[in-house]
Length: 162
Image 1: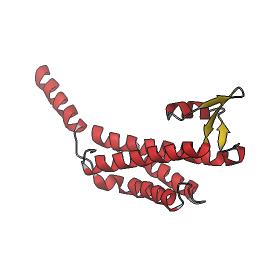
Image 2: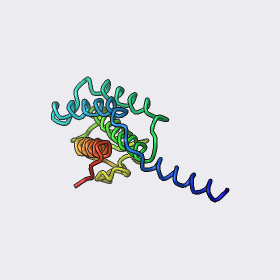
Image 3: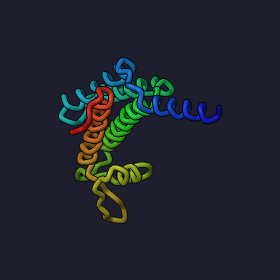
Image 4: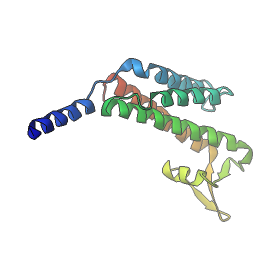
């Protein structure tokens, strides 16, 4: 009896892990992500004044899906959207550093240091501080967000990267 129960539990776990993805569940978050992508594209990579509002909506759509995913595949889709959200947040953070830029470079302080390291930004050491090129950082965050959105879309549609 225990063996039969163990087999059923194991098969149930496998089935949940490989469950198909409910595309309708991710429509709103995908739409919000695409609006962010379009906003950045239309503004030459700088983001419009509406960008923070769009980012807030994207975050809200992701939050609404927490606890509503079924199986590993849907969880991976949500992780990809969350990673894109993080990249967009960091883009916005570095965009706000414009007033602190000296010759296009910003001094890394506080939570910006680990972010720069995590994303592999080119860091220059000078004058006792660590500096990064603000526009390069913003471009890298946008590229990462775009890659994560593309990954999420591929996962939802069941396609594999080329």
